[in-house]
Amino acid sequence: MKRTLPLFAIPSCTMALLTMALFAMALFPMVGGSALAESPESPAPRGPPPGPPPPYQMRAPLPAGDRLAGGKDGAALFSNRCGACHLAGGMGTNLLTKQRVILREPPQSGLLENRQDLTQNYVKIIVRRGRMAMPSLTRVEVTDAELDAIAVYLGKAGP
Image 1 (spheres, rainbow, N blue to C red):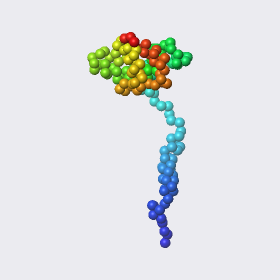
Image 2: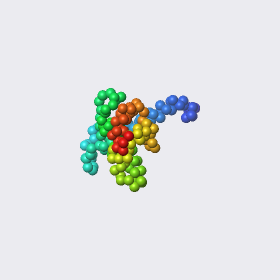
Image 3: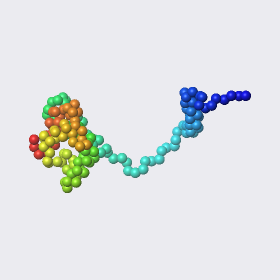
Image 4: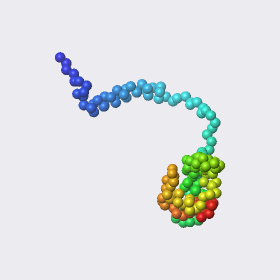
């Protein structure tokens, strides 16, 4: 009489190998032969051609030179250091626009560059401490000299 082992008596590593082998054999017809041959040209994309990336993805390059030295262009630093969130279309701009509209301010006031009520001190405090969804930025991420230039650029209401 032929004796067979119950399924649970097969070692788990052997079962895993058997399972992988069965899975591979089941997939082989799908990837074999004609499926590997080159497919005909893909259909033309639908809709209008893609436009340029949104402004928050088109940030200015970081000004050259020593990051610890002052006298840098505040607009370029703002674009490079803050633009991912605070240029048009960025998350920070979208959140600020929503808050400003609730306060019955025009939507354009969501762009920090358009604000006339920001002081240089306020900009520095918010950058270093963070506020709501905005994280605090360290002196490694934005040096004091860079922050001074950004604060002068944004702080149109004075020091």
